[in-house]
Image (cartoon, rainbow, N blue to C red; front, side, top):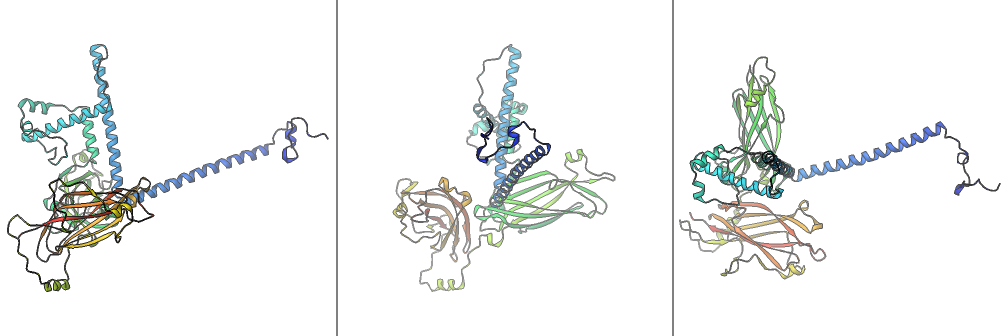
Length: 557
């Protein structure tokens, strides 16, 4: 036939359809079929995208939940950082707005824009810090003159100081100026930023016995108190699943039961206020807000409201007490009148008619988390009796005591100041470890035993960045049958694998304290060692080596 007509390409099929030669319109059924196929493909595409997004969200939720379980305080720290960033942004915006208003006002007066120095965000922040320092000085002058309200704590961590004469000198003109000084928008923004940075929680001076860790009242994990028509009961327990003891994260649950004992009155809970102090801390955290678990429940005569909440604490157990924290509080409420369904806006604003006490109770560590005192066995007592050693001379009744160390004595002291680095061990430098490898140790020196265990913290490590974090737990026990001691200082030497030097860490006390150990008592704490090191896995699993000593004194009678 001479082949296909001009312009027609048969291709590998060997044929062409009539619609490619003649201008034949597509049938309605074929067009509908093609449209339906396109719609189906589009739906399948959207379905796959939605499934992928759902899977991604589920993985993100799972990771967030695991992070919260592993580190209960991480989410709060992240939220606090975000609040600080938002407040700093508001502070910058407030400064910019004040600058614009001053420029517009100057233009109205002068008829033109004045030549003023451009205010950058950095210089504005520096000015804000300068004004904040002036504000602290003003408040301290007020308090020194007897007019202060305790707005600035004596324990505030300030990087500057004032002369005593300057602080205590305040003229009448200064007082009038301070009292009449209005707050600018920047002052208000800085106050909001300070409240956001601290989580918005005020603090109060803590109880002395909780600060010392020597509780002078009966320790109870429950309490019950009746105030007017309401009885408030609370019970608490340790939440093992949400705690991470090596990282000092301890989570407690507490259940509160509020009962309306009145036979005639209906009450409504409006707000709550709690005071919590962890052991060893000198301050109480104050938690307050409207409602209870986001509600303002109404209790008719005989009715009960009960809820359970959690308290994630960052605290270290100490040997002198089994408590982790002390808590007390109050619930504000009103008595509803006949025919009144709920509290009015004015009643809510006034904070209620009366308060129901949440009596003091304690969060108590479980037995396995406490620092247990050492008690020598009968066999050990008999061995001590068989020793042919001369009796020890009792320490004199004075403040002076002879010093000893809990490990072999250190090298003789020189006139030079102690070095921050020392020559390292050759086997650690080469990676050919010459001694037995152990991630724990147990040493007894002069009646004081020091036990150490260490663990790797993968969640705080980044192998790609050669960042490795370890947690180590140290337990110091006074095994002397009659001599009390006090830990006064520490000195550690640590060398990473491949390094030619040892880093020396030393200072007074242990974790900021100088604990006293009576015969049989123990002191235990956990700390972390973040290391920047490249492991030599082809030679040894060791990443670092640590040794040291804890210095103590013998206490007199």
